[in-house]
Length: 413
Length: 165
Image (cartoon, rainbow over all chains, first blue to last red; front, top):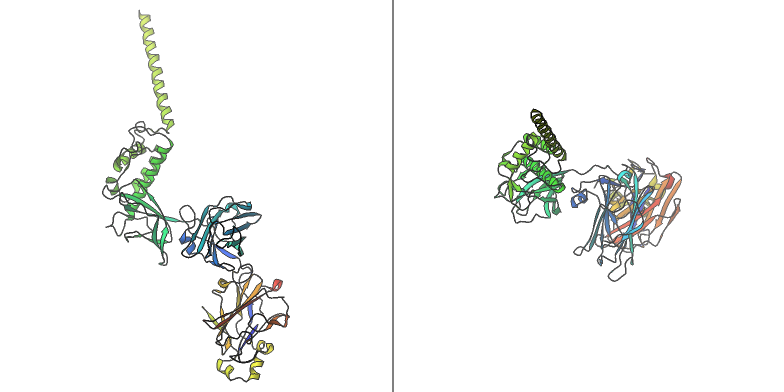
């Protein structure tokens, strides 16, 4: 092919002036389709996308009456898209969005606004969204819409699906759906369905402080995100009565550092525990111990929620679970925290704390199956039946023996 | 971004050319006969509704033009459509006077136009075997003193991986 461009200068006629040229063979290379690759990303612990997820996905420009970008991602077999649209006159209930996802014979067709109204506009074969986030940032005059749908068995790696979306800018005073439309449509090629991996770490927060909803995080490659929603879970566990509650933070595995408000940097990767502001290095061994205690807490809460726990029991864990937990406890490298840690007494909520040493003592007894009657749980019904059956047999035996003695005495008389 | 230079003549040689030589340079046959070197690889990009947008051109290999003006060309594909973007510096912006000419030759088919870069006059030269352009965008950036021209055509069943044209 060839191209020529002739610059006529300031006064020349058409076709006069300096010549510029190009000539080369062209060869059609690579893929036969321009379908957008939908890559797998890491999400939060619920399998939803977050800012980090989208930071790893190439945006595709949408141009027209309004300008914006669109991104596509997979977490497991859930398909997500994120629309960002610049609109200087954003009115969340009149600006309209209308999209269609076509997967084989199935479709997900919805339209609505940016005020949490997205009814069906045709088939809605994938039901309700697994993630719905919408909002308008006045500072940047930009809408953001994130939706995700579970494709389940319709996910096939390498298959093509079709996606189209229309955005209608109603302006400052227009009605819903009025105004110029900006459209995007493309085939998408589904990538792998790797589920997200997550790590955990633990740190201590003062008793009266609230857990932060977001953290500054650093991801692989050194990029800093501020602020980023990372799931953090408060607990009743205190590893030392002077050190406040333990917070569990669950983070995508590409997060390398989590930065607290006091600028303390928590390095991720080994399930470390950071026990106080003086603890800069953290300890993976203590982190393992805390993770174990967290699991004990969950087991205790589960029993408490499902049935009554006998008075006097501070552990409240069934024998099978206790044995599994106790095996893990035995394998822990660092058990020092068990001597100082306390937690809530779930048996009688509000009655104060219980030492973890006492919980572990009962856990050991239950796991050893030596005193199961004493720490009997309401949901351990087989033990109850055995006990009452035994008592019944003994009672019948005593009555029978008594009857024999009475009859013998009567004969003697 | 990787640049690929496929020149017919050095800049100095072009500047020294006579008007007749320049006219010959812009003659389709003369240019085509000089084509040499490794073919430019036309790779798939993502567009919107079958045509390119600004994002489509990111990362697409740039080939430098030869001449007085600093210019570059890009050639991506969207499915079976082939596109071209010309970006060329020109301090003396007179879009109706600059001459633009391009030719794609695919086997015995020709997709060629000649005209101005203003947008209202770009005619077949001599024909458009693949039909009207699927995209024709003209622009001039005053601050950068830069023309842009985007065109594309539907190659249809002639599109085939490995095809050299």
